[in-house]
Amino acid sequence: MISLTSPVRTRAHDWPAGAKLAALCVVTVLLFKAQSLWIHAGVFAGMLVLYRLPGPVFFRAGLRALRVLWPFVVMLALYHLVTWTPYAGGVILLRMVTAVGLATLVTMTTQLSDLIAVVRWLATPLRALGLKTAYLETAIALVIRFTPVLLTKGTKLIDAWRARSPRRPGWRIILPFTVLALDDADHIAEALRARGGFDAMKE
Image (cartoon, rainbow, N blue to C red; front, side):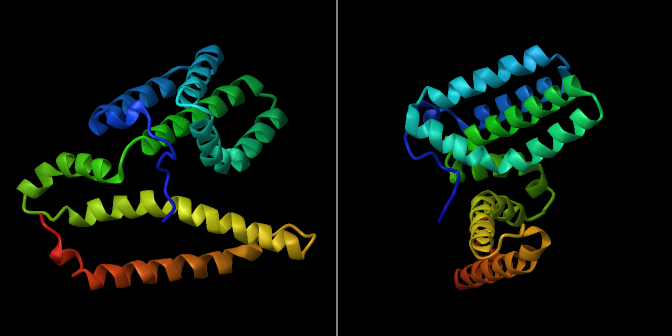
């Protein structure tokens, strides 16, 4: 199973998941409040340093995880160049890449079980009201687990198309990508049923 887990062990793996998520929330809020390009550039540089500290293997893995952002970067850059708002565009681009990069950093250095434990703790008031939170916990786990999987399969579909046609794939890969996603969903549903479904999960 492909996930965003780090290929190497770092000191950040030993930090509490709740503390890392809380710090991520605070930094993200501050990023959206800041309007200075230099502040965003500084935080972006700091994020790159955090990726580089554990070593080159971790750094390369982090950059590979962030490659999915390049279409959005290109579109936003072109839009702000056309509208003659490069400063605002730079702020938005740095904010987006930094926020996603820090979130990816937290995901890479935190076990999925620890993330789910934080969600479970946050959902304690809901359980006090008699609501089942297993659905929410499992849904979040599946999103975290399978987003990288679907991104990888989408990339392979695009590569396969380019190997067979000089034309851009565009909308043509939507149908096969949807079929792949539905097939994965069917396998996951079967796995959940084989384990007793949600009713077998402990609250």
